[in-house]
Image (cartoon, rainbow over all chains, first blue to last red; front, side):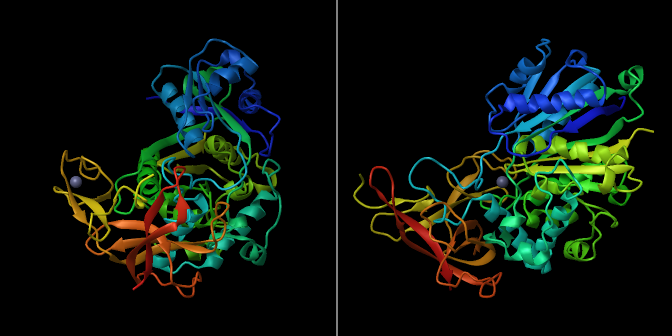
Amino acid sequence: MADAYVVGVDMIKFGRFPEKSVPQLGAEAALLALDDCGLTIKDMQALYCGNLNQASGMVGQRLLQEIGQTGIPVVNVSNACATGATAFREAWMSVKADVYDIVLAVGVEQMGKGLLGGGGGSKGISKEGLLGSGTMPSVFAEAGLEHTRNHGTTFEQFAKVSVKNHHHSTMNAKAMYQIETPLEVVMNAEMISYPNTKLMCSVNVDGSAAAVIASEQKARELGLMDRAIKVRASVLTSDPWQERDLVMPDVNSCTRMASKSAYEMAGVGPEDIDLVELHDCFATAEILHYENLGLCEEGEAGRLIDDGDVELGGRIPVNVSGGLLSKGHPLGATGIANIYEVSTHLRGEAGRRQVEDAKIGLTHVIGLGSACGIHILEKAA
Amino acid sequence: MSDGPLPVVSYLKMPEGGKPYLEGHRCDVCGAVFLGERRHCSKCGARDSMSTFQLSNRGTLYSYSIVHRSFPGNDVPYISAIVDLEGGGTIKGNLIGIEADPEKISFGMPVEVIFDDALGRKDGDGNSYLSYFFKPA
Ligand SMILES: [Zn+2]
């Protein structure tokens, strides 16, 4: 099968835009991605649109009502925090399958403020605070402390993830925040669910990101190979059975399955990866994924953050965009925003936060329920 | 409105004249344990393979979080605990009877499952509920 390439990709600056509609937000990113490759909506043969909160709202079609109703097929995608990555992957598959030669993938989300999760069931009484907690900060606190149990990882090591990602975001104008947060500030911030303080929780923001995906032949015809990004692997997994998964969502197994498949598909190993954008929905989660993605040996994640290996300039920079912790986490947009970030480095266009000589990058998202999406990208030869 | 309290979850059983207990489902083929009614096994795919059994009231703390921000009206901080039960099954609940301080809590500590009123919570019809909690054993 011929390769498929990202030829245009972009995101809006993440923020809070209550005055805009979801399709309007998505349309902004779609136009930016089209501009990135000098094309128009009339060149697109299909649209794959990821959105969570209006999953039944035909967001993709309404997006076309904003920028051009060309009559192309639209697929609306919803897959928890893997929504954007899934929309991208569906778009990629349609090109790989030779059904279309050039398509558009969009991820968009408008978020409220406050705690996610913990609603659980309409009958009877609320179980939140009665049968433990189902809020996301607690779920990921419990997943983090499982790592503490197994490897002795400390509150301070978890907190260092936020210090790093907030620092990275000071170099990213598209991040929601550009604010340094020293270790003592992170550790002394309001405790939400130990060991996650407020500064260790991702930011609920509105946002959108989009990518134009083309077959190699189409990309060459259009003269777009110069800045094209090859999709070397695209993988999606769901959660395999685990003994505790009825009460403890397992973010590890489906990430491990996905990374193993992705490395095989790409024919590379973790040692070949120059940068990673992974799903730091909470600081605790990032630590788990160092090992899940094979960036270090089992039990070495704490050392990886202590030694600075995952900082910009380190051995394997992680979340140089600022990550979900500081760039923000508009659920349906996140997967494509990660692809934008890695593509921008592979193109050598990341400015102050550029990872030097980046040739291959990896993106990872995971949505509880569960769905894990991984992409491995490389600058076209 | 019912005469007595209702069970907080479907797998909390309240036999007439007997003590309340938690019920598990175990796959006859692969031994996987589940909470709540089900027919088929999502571990091995076996059909109509479930038998019910009484979950143990003793277990050990697997992981936890200390919840400082919760929904309005919930007392904080409290400990959200994940407990592995003796003989199989993992359940989640509030760990009470111990300070909500990571220095005081240890992984693997033995706990007991106790049954008590659901913190005074009532549903729209005024029914009260029986819940379960963990306390250090
Ligand atoms: Zn089975």
